[in-house]
Length: 499
Ligand SMILES: [Zn+2]
Ligand SMILES: [Zn+2]
Image (cartoon, rainbow, N blue to C red):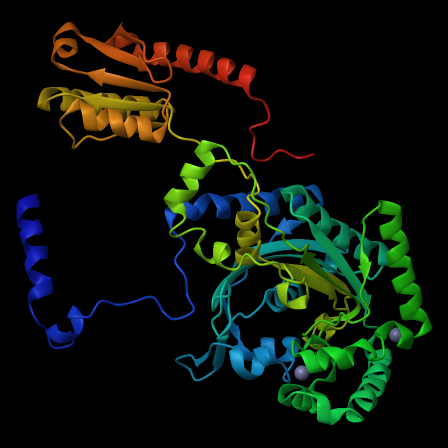
């Protein structure tokens, strides 16, 4: 039966059918522009980030929420704001089969707020604290380190507007990056509540109107549609104008001012360092009062004296993993463009989306950017642990028996590597060496007859014959000893090490 079914599957793809012309099936499908595969060798970075997000969120009492990647388009239009690049140009929008417009989520807060309203979370003890991570989609111009499917994690506190919550959110974000070991700065500002923001917008528009001729084309457009975005412009002429532009904090009403002062006092009390940044406004419409961003410090690559292992390792994966980061190694001036993430208060969003008023604050951080920073700065996130044991065989009979041993050891919880399809001992030992296993078990003709196994300590090179039946106990004992030996030499290997 297996033979027959295999033959069948061999034939079918070559037979042209009506809805699958042969010509078409020959073209190899390719990755979409702006998209990226995350390969197995890069996975430990992603695991590391998700572990750190989980750990941070849980110590601050946040529960994880997973919302769908597809939502009604109107959710994003109403939350992110019509006059933004995201809504105007970047959203993946399609009609579903019933003709309603749906979109791939371009950011995370809108979905979380929809869920908060839809599940009646207002009736739970307030505030509700939630975190998320996952893929998001923006049909952006592809550029180094930015993808159309990208990943973010985020923290949200919904249902209370006490300034201590702002301080908690800022502290949580700060410690998240600090505990990873990234040198960052926390940039803070207040954009006020909608009314004081309107006052500010007027002054800002007045200021720029008088200088309209020096503005870039984009900014002339922004002046009409979304004047706050004028402060985000990268063009050097616009940057010069920005220097003397009015500052949001000068236009805060008494209440907004008090709130902001209180947030800063709490941060001082927590000894969380921050930089007051009067030009910081966030691009999305829904922000009010506290706005903040995490900027990486300037990276000055110094030729460190690397040890041999490290250098070898880099040669190996330099081709794929480090490619982008190694290329743009020249110091980049920190700015909103290089921000690792940002957030702020969104006190009116829940109401805007049809819920009872529920003030809130949140943060979202990019994962691709964070991984780039970690690679570029050679931050130690711990190496993936190699398997403990390699099983090697000589000949067909031994292969049968070693397959069974593999299965038993695996069930007992050992991490085992193998190369069942190889015949000679040499290629198998080479592989065991390359993997960095602690012990290799060898089953040859002699051991097969004697009912024994050879166990080789890969570090010392010593080999011993042991009874087949005692192998599990032998391995347990030796691995335990090995652990003791390792620990007494090197401490502090844990990747989750918190200071
Ligand atoms: Zn401009
Ligand atoms: Zn105000």
